[in-house]
Image 1 (tube, rainbow, N blue to C red):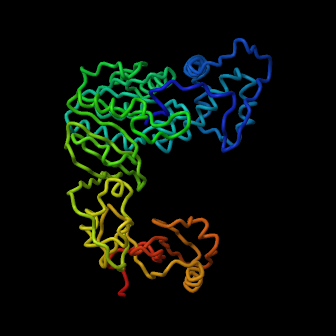
Image 2 (cartoon, rainbow, N blue to C red):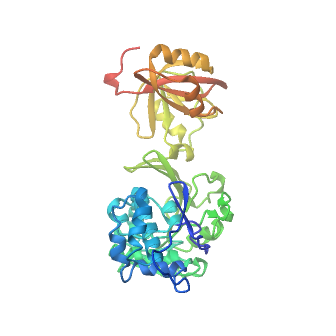
Length: 437
């Protein structure tokens, strides 16, 4: 989703803002302020950033240190209106946060809302999706619930003409400003309207990113999205191609028969699921970025359960969400350690982009005293704790065993054939570097 409830009107935030977890009151202007003329409307505040003294003030904050915000704000308010300084400092903070998703070069030129930064599609994921659209021969896309324009930007950079639609006035204005800031206005048209009334008949494809957050937080029911998933599916079926961005936790049974379901991870972290129409009906896949590396389901039965071998493989989250653990287990000639746990075990080390391999040195029934003694014997001071199928929290375990020493190890808190178990090991080395057992 490009922005929280990007297809819904959002309430204006209060006159306080967050900074590193604490609430900071807005500072008073060092001089007389006419409250009757001070802009409170977010659209007016945003417009001030883009006109008059706003752009120069914002540019001066490119490298500002948020830890010095009080001093910076006090200094700037001697020369600029308080409302403009507040808006500029807020935007500067958002740009710094957005650099992780958009890259520093783009983030420095773009505009954001707090929810827009949080919910915007990561640039690498948006670029991958745009490339998929381009490979399908798509030359125009209606981007519905466009948010601050992250996907519209990627589509335009792939040479695709975009109609970007969002019904929130501030969000739409930010998307328009971003198209201008990045020199993409010839390819991106922004409209502020309800997407359910948008005519998409002139476009090769639609991309719909329904809002999945409401006033009480994350929305889990697809029919509670805004607009509902059923509406998005109906809109998708009106065009030759379409993609619907959905939550990764969507039940597989909720995927329409005529859709391709794709789960995407970036750097090992699951980012989203996408329903594609006009591609491969019924196909299920996991895509890993960077790459991309793509794994497609082949309908294999669940892998067999076997005893723990020399190596343990932790499948990528997109592989697990796509229910493709069996495909990876087949590649590795491995099996599961438990019928309910997505850890694969095998006797040989085989390279795969779809799972991380560990060499297992010890298998113990769960017990803190045994683990503490083993770690002390091995001189383990750096302990990585992973869990699957265990109620024990990693930080709690690390605090209780108090690892000390020069060596490192990884402990897996899990179940093996139904029994609570601790597997101790280390990241596997290439085959030529592994010592004989």
